[in-house]
Image (cartoon, rainbow, N blue to C red; front, side, top):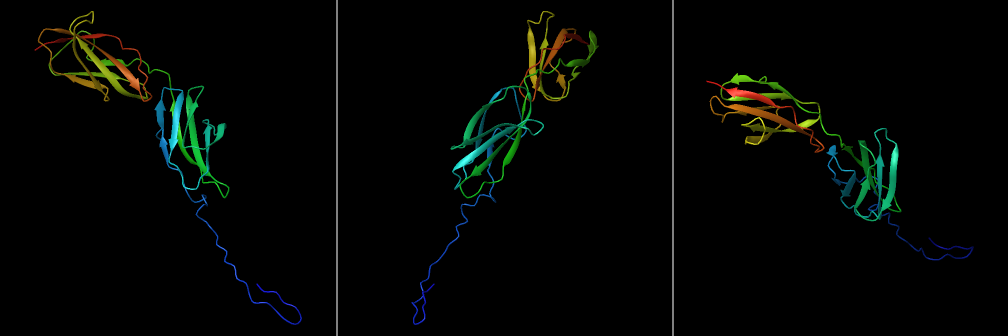
Length: 210
């Protein structure tokens, strides 16, 4: 740039203009930490954490219901917060880093709040009072959503002499430690993905025969 008139002109003055795009967050993504994506939980209050983003001066944290309707939206200066759900259901949570220049896209995860215990497992085989040989394959049926079973085997009908207990995720269990001509009684209790334990199944008896 220089000044001019009819008889003279000044020398040029030069200025440099630098466009700083490092603070542009529009092409960056927040890395979410906890809860993990598609987590099942039986706790209403959850802690949410995510990775800090360079040049973000605040974070927009939002919670949406299963229909995508916004339940909560807030601005935070740090990379964690607590939120308490008020009902069971499927929810989404998302975070965007922001500054005066631009916001980042939202990073989103789902969480399932479930406080309902699973139904009792239905014992299948052996039938009640069946005579069986070792090893005995104990089988049962679970409702959808169960991911772990606890099995209990007793040597008395009052269920005071526990001889074996274990966990399985296969809706069956092989028992091989019984004594001949001995009565055994077995029950199963189920846990769902959110950590809820259901009520114990009915009791069944089997007899070890040759």
